[in-house]
Length: 132
Length: 507
View 1 (cartoon, chains in turn green, orange):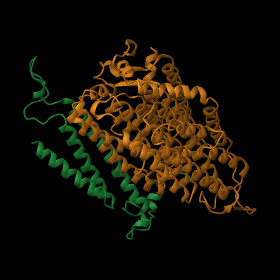
View 2 (view 1 turned 60 degrees about the vertical axis):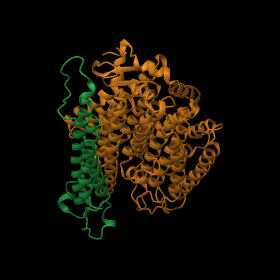
View 3 (view 1 turned 120 degrees about the vertical axis):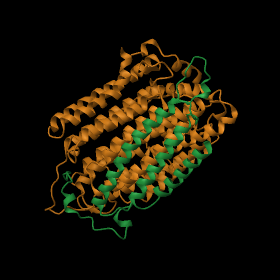
View 4 (view 1 turned 135 degrees about the vertical axis):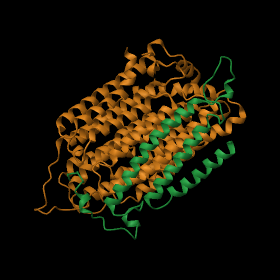
């Protein structure tokens, strides 16, 4: 099982890194999500991988090395929640950058030959900023 | 009772976040009053922590009363107290500046600013490495939103890069923490340091790998070579008070490097001891060199300022990387100086940009600004401080670092890099100053008049006074940073002390 989990983490990281290095925002967001899955699996695996050994010690004197360490599971839970929030934020920001800049290229309109002119009156209007 | 003060710098801004969101954007006066009031109280709490830490010795605060080392602890020692007070001061000054109109560029400036304060101060205070991750995320989400405040196109673009690199950094942080936990079975920093001392020799390689992954993560936050390329654009596109506040964020990275690599994996950490020692000093020196090349080719003031921030990070890392009592003490003195001066620089650049309507802050000939005397003087003082010329604290800070390196084997490399870099910084700053203030054409009579906002100038003056005070009281401050650094190089007493929390630490 260790080998399977290790391969899964490796493949997820490889795909995540490849996608993060792409030039459009959508693959980057998906890449970040894959990378965070890999990280969560890794954290989970640090608590020992064993079947049918929930972290509940049934009697005094049981050998604790036979049970799963519950703390990494709590860490994974925290990491999942934080990762979920961050992913939601970057999804909204990618959308905003597409609407503001007229392109989903990660380096903006200058780097993108396919960019639309960055004028979208509907969204200009939502800009609540006031020029100084 | 007074031990409860330890959690005030975390709870107070957090309460303000919730409260200010409820108040909303309609009652700007009320929001500003609450926000400034809370920031002032926060600064007072930070100063009180400094006086407690320097009188009494370090103490721990057990959050929720969980026994050490199972619960989360906050550690108030000289280092964390000093950094919290510094954050409080910079936060208050930046808020004062933002209240001159910057906070109206977009909604919800103040709650997000308080969130950033909460995250930064939490990261300084926590004694638990996973809790450090959580506070990093809090300060990052605050910084993401503050960076986008006003949401202009360059900010959105810089925000996308900044957030992507930091999300990758967060993933790496978890991998590093998970690896350290797997081998030590604890997340408490003091406990982890104690457990590492008895680590079996064949586990050392993976622990070292985990520690170096953490160095990469903190390097992203601190903007060390080669992970600094996000910084000039991010800081440059942010609103002025936000960029000034971000000056503290690179220091969070350096602080985390000190905590993890000089304390947890310090010289006594068994087979994995000093995992980062061969790396930090060379990286610091390369960072300085690369930043100086960047500073010399900058085409605008904000780009120049960004590269000077990176150079100051390199200088601090060089001091920390000496892994000696004197080196750490000098780096801490320089760290506070650099935070103050970088904040002041971004605020001065904002004044220049308001008045250079035709050229913004580009280093190109343009019409004369309207108040060259006032703004020029402020710029001159900040330039002296950031370059490190006498008589201001930049000179003292660099001198301390040079002195600390005097009898180390890396003396030649460090002295050459630091001195040549100071020369380059001086050339870059004098070129920028002469282009902006002297290479000008007269303003046409019909050009719009822009009044000089007195409160903004006053705010910058407060920052400059703080730099002057940091210079004038260099003696007592150096004693304080010396005592701070001493705690790191007598780990036995420090660990024993942190492992036996006083009864007063219980809530």
